[in-house]
Length: 436
Ligand SMILES: Cc1cc2nc3c(=O)[nH]c(=O)nc-3n(C[C@H](O)[C@H](O)[C@H](O)COP(=O)(O)OP(=O)(O)OC[C@H]3O[C@@H](n4cnc5c(N)ncnc54)[C@H](O)[C@@H]3O)c2cc1C
Image 1 (cartoon, rainbow, N blue to C red):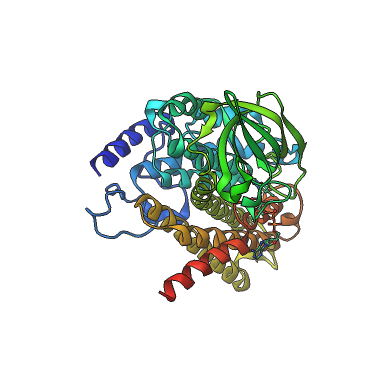
Image 2 (image 1 turned 135 degrees about the horizontal axis):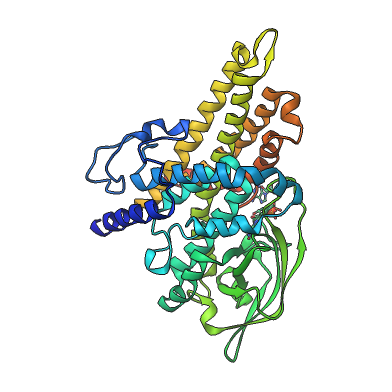
């Protein structure tokens, strides 16, 4: 525990250097849903030493993350949101800023050039980014929760030294599991790996791969021994520069349009031995473990999206739009809807933070992560849809962020396990628990 406390303290120091604008004080709270977290408190990671606290309480490090990312998102992302969405392209200068801000190596230890923060700090950052742009949020989310974590958890000491400094400071990562014929049934994947003299050769196609335009680093799942079924699945590191690697198609999408989503082909891609990630045949376990954590990130993305949509509409109906001689947000019919939606966002956030805290505490969090993702994506869809109605015609036109948030919300029920798959996970675990 002492070492966790030490690293948290050093993370707070690092954070104040890298994230905090000099005028931002930790005690100031920027977002309304976390007003209780404005109180200064002990680091919540030392859970045995303090009485239970409200789930929304944050450590100093997490508060700094929330405040600095909120400020960064308003200043650096908001002015670009509409343009990037229309162009269906992430601004490369913005990706550079994400690295500069330390947002691409949130959990990577400082010795590797990362920010050395805890998982919940990352979750808070992902949520804050989504409040302004869910596309930027998912770029940061996939890179941190799936790619960096894969190396941190399963990489050798040598591969950590080789890749982590790059991932923290300059190289975007992608996570390649899905294929044309294997989405929910991910382990039916057909991409093959074979052993060659000095390493491995990969052949196959991956589909819907987030970050693939911006990324140079790809975690690729391929079957090294199809006779063993899913137990042949193995994880590899592939660089974009590898011969035989190609982006076959960039998808045009309903939402999160600035986030790149591509089909990738691997034609006799040869990689050296040391680009095996972890152990042969363990890829399916790694994928399950990583996606269980990753889901909390998507749930945070959806919570941030819902709050961003709500705040945007609330400002319009409470400060701007008048009908029948009064602000439209003063009609009771409107007020009840705003209150209901905010309550749902708060409930989604509680599920997200609870899953995140349980993961950090080393408890089983699989059901919590599934519930958080399921519910947060439902809330995001509902609230962003209602927000358009609250704003009337102004919500429907492509000027502000209202219609974009609605389009962006749909993906929450699809990637990193569809809502049906989350329900299946929740039901399976409940049944096990209640039939013991
Ligand atoms: C924008 C975007 C980004 C993505 N990014 C990545 C990425 O970076 N890396 C990656 O590997 N993948 C990525 N994906 C893929 C994503 O994870 C899959 O789309 C998702 O897992 C669903 O798979 P599918 O699309 O093949 O749907 P399918 O599996 O074909 O499902 C279709 C429908 O059938 C339902 N269904 C399937 N099986 C069951 C069941 N057993 N019980 C009940 N209902 C079921 C589903 O819930 C869904 O409603 C991305 C997808 C998108 C759209």
